[in-house]
Length: 446
Image 1: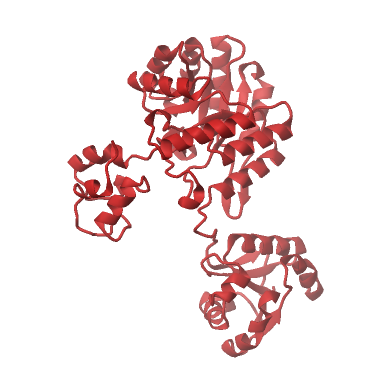
Image 2: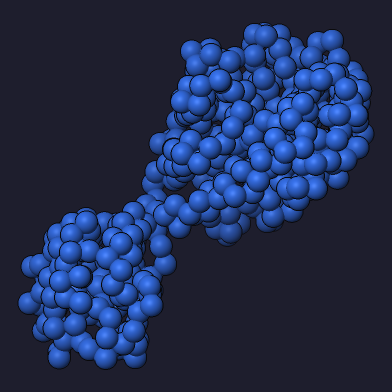
């Protein structure tokens, strides 16, 4: 039974040291009771308290790590049903499926697609994180051969072994047992054999069943066999079933504390039509799928899906920001123009992109306004003449340029007069209101 905040508080140090990030131990206890904090945040909790409160403090959806090293990915560990309640923590993992009949060039092409999938969007590196090797030939040796090709061709990339035949899994895991692979899948028929492999190899294990009742029963059975790190597959393949079943699983875990369904979800969204596959994958991202298996990872498809995932898993309470600095765009020289904008990520990357399109090397001063856009920051009093002048003065940009001209966004043209007063000797030029006007504006000055 879940403990109340007051009951949890009795076992905390009661020092109100704030090391956990909360003002008092009671406030921290309330967060623990609401599954909105981890007991690990309290460095002074006793071992007895950790044992006693472990279940109460554990997140309703178990955390699972796939792979090892710097390419390892974490799924699960979620604490809310809707992101605006707090945020979603661990983004969905995208994996490309490679059938064991695709050994050789076909597999190599997909491996290369994963290795070159990384994109840079608003300062974050996004990529396809995993590869799923799928048994279709019924030949353990052929399956193991593709697993080895993946391990050799994509070092460090997490691997998912997909077969319901324990012998096939045994053959494949022999090449990646030290890589913390995910095994798919334990069923009612093979649960004991699959659990034995997962336990011996310290691998995570998918439990697969048709329907939520059978799934809950099977997860309890496999857990009883000694495997703690589980992933769920309810059998949903149509978008309608995914939305319905994944929502029920998430709600049962978060709102009801139903442990048999308190695990990450894996979703197979492969379709013959690439657009349909992208749409199904988008449903998975938005409705709680932690691991999404695709047939192919074309650039256009992944750009859309990675962007969607980034937006869903961004903290809605914290604007995306870039570091305050003066950035070189192109081969900027002493005579190159100097512009200023705020550190809201989208503002920065849109402005930078347009400056790059202009082919005019420039200096771009990015001022910390707590991640607000130009107009919002100005309205909030965070992008004022005084603060801009202080930033420009303290940035040391004058050492890099041979002129004293600052181009400000057209939306804050009202600041030009006061800026010239705050920056004696400087010329303040009003630039375009919209970033897409920068190429024409800069070329006309070149």
